[in-house]
Amino acid sequence: MGCGLSQLAAKFAFFPPTPPTYQIKKKEGGAFPLPHADDNSLDVLLIDTKRGNKIVAFYLRNPYARLTLLYSHGNAADLGQLYDLFVQLKVNLRVNLIGYDYSGYGASTGKPSESNTYADIEAVYQCLQTEYGVSQEDLILYGQSVGSGPTLHLAAKLPRLRGVVLHSAILSGLRVLCHVNCAFCFDIYRNMQNINKVQVVKCPVLVIHGTEDDVVNWLHGDGLWKLAREPYEPLWIKGGGHCNLELYPDYIRHLWRFIHEMENMNTKLRLKRIRQCLNLKPKSSTRHRCCRFRLWRPRCPTCFTPTCIKVRFCSIKCSMGGGCWKYCCPLQCCWKPSSRCCSTKCSTSCCFRWQCCCCCCGQTSIGMNGKHEG
Image 1 (cartoon, helix red, strand yellow):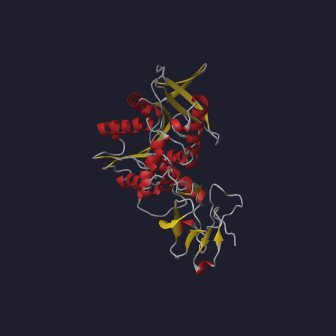
Image 2: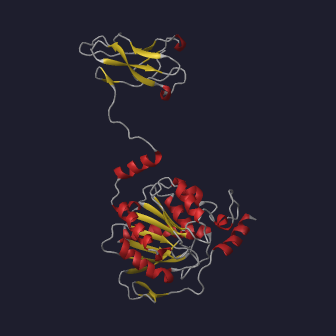
């Protein structure tokens, strides 16, 4: 029943242009599209997917590019209609760009479905790795409208991805039609609802949405941006609709800034951004030491966790003349060093065993390795 409803929903969710706006002519050593056969920077690829379909992809090269943009287009469009946009993005953003038609779109074989879109983008990514040597560290995924589904599907599987762009993206197929907070078996992109997958994406996520989008409400973009693990400054285009955001000057300006920052981002900067998003303080490189020995923080004998222990400096002086630490937990069991040496041949340094002075702990002693000794 669920499978039948999914197939029915797919018929209402995917609208490939009929007839296709381009044709593929095969020749020796490859293929070329009509009417764009004279572009020397364009590679036309025929890619096999794991579901047995053969999809078409356009790869546009930029000799000055450092990153590659994998573009998943929206509904009711194919590569023939997007070719001019691809050329502009390639030049203005200074990137290599690959776009592809889903199964059943353009000159790609098969039928459009949710499962096929997943297989399609996975095949394109594998092609980038094998044919062009593109790693995930140098890749930015771009998903427009329905294309946000396969984009987040792949992004959730690539932990070292450079970045993600969500353009007029959807929370899920059913949420485009009505505002619901639950999933149904026939919902498009139910298995990887964008509302769930965006939370596990481990790279910066840029959300672009028009405030007057009458196809996918602006609340979809706002919801995805708020749920992103590492959100980038969003772009809300005032008066922008669903299919005209590229016409606004802020679109290319904001997108260029995002690409430029992703180019210059290193591991250290990414960790700093993640800490800022999670409101985490950087770890201190200094360690507390007593008598030049590394101290292991003792565990609470009641709950056996180090998280409840607070550290404070006390006035007890050890035999080496340095200050030692007094550990106190909320249960008021304090730990102090014992003057008993653990070695018979200790002439130059003194080592300590931590002993509990609180009766509630049963006089249990803990060694410097943090384990109970009875």
